[in-house]
Image (cartoon, rainbow, N blue to C red):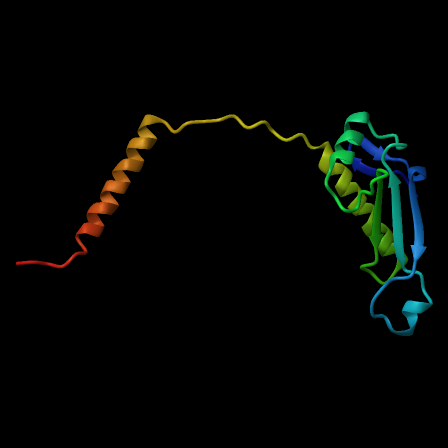
Length: 139
């Protein structure tokens, strides 16, 4: 298994991801009791080679997949084959780590211009005039 590529500049070495085959839950007939097609992915955040900033952000996430010990646990059992579940679990892990690599743009407060305020007030006056014409006609 090659390294898991998260972004073009960030990858997770395969030795840091622990993959265990387990039996899937749910329907599947007799096959579900014999074949271990589901997978448990475990990734220890604190002992990983990720930059310290990303580790802090991951540990600060309020995500049910991250345990109190700082271990990401992903259960992949959507597909019938172990290979597809493995790819799905790794993709979900990469998505979770990619989420903390994105820096949110800081919001700057803006105000509407005087012309924009005037246009808004004109349109409100116009609508009010239209509505006033809907009343009963008196002779």
